[in-house]
Image 1 (cartoon, rainbow, N blue to C red):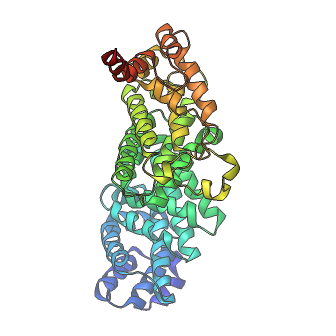
Image 2: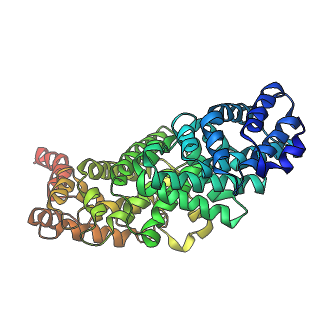
Image 3: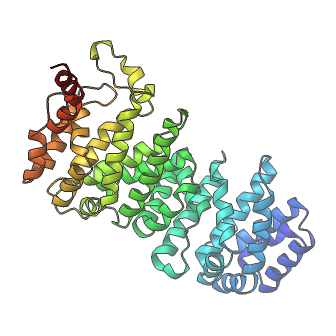
Length: 424
């Protein structure tokens, strides 16, 4: 076949010639140069001004075959040379044109061969700016499908990873903007699915996603409240695992994700009165119990692990070293969450008292450079615990300056009293 001639006259291409191109592809599939030229012909045939009959024929007759070929190419090629890059660019351009031009093709892609989209997004981490732009265009199409054809919409791990990588790494602002638009769509409409695959993301992607969620209210308004139980569940798992690891003497564990999850909960529980997010967090009694348990564990680790050891003498503090502490601010933010969850919430106030959380909070009140303004947050938490709660006020009133209750003092001095009585 005279492929160059077909490409040059693509505006008048016949349906038979389209069929012949696929036959030639089948015969020459091992010849990368020929396959690239066939893709050029199809790209030209499906261009913006292509005839509807060509687009429809391509989708109705050849969609499945094209996507199978595309899958084979994308699975096998990790482009390094310019000819390989050209081949991938042409393939992505055909995929874009076919998606943009035919609902039938989109249906086949999203419902039967979505793996092709997954493979395409996996190329987002490369250095080729053209490929990044093409995948950004695919992201835009993918988002539009979600908006207009939700029955065909699918969120997969490779797509989410590709969007996050594009947002983080792209040197082209337009690519990052389109990636953010797609991420905004899935966070608004598929937040439960996003967080369900959270554990499969790498550390950098997890941190990027949590940063986006944290900044969301100031940019886009309140996030879907369905995110709250998933985030709280993730925090419980991550934080318990982290502190258990530290307790077992393994201090190399990276706490970044746990700290970001905690910071997100702090943000949600600080929301204005009437916030559905704050109410949702406050309703999770097990989260409150876990937060008190974690605070107690972190407090005890201060006797064993340097990262958790309080720094009392502020005059001797090395600011850079303190901020480099991997668990910088962890105890403070636990106190914040506990205090915020008890704000005008009688059940939570009582729960903290019942699990002996009040003396623990007071024990955390001394200055600690590893947890800036901890004292102020403890005061705030105690204020919220005592608000219209006489039982909690009574517990505070019974606390000795050293952090011991009257009953504790009696127990501690009983042995000495018995000794004195024995001598009489």
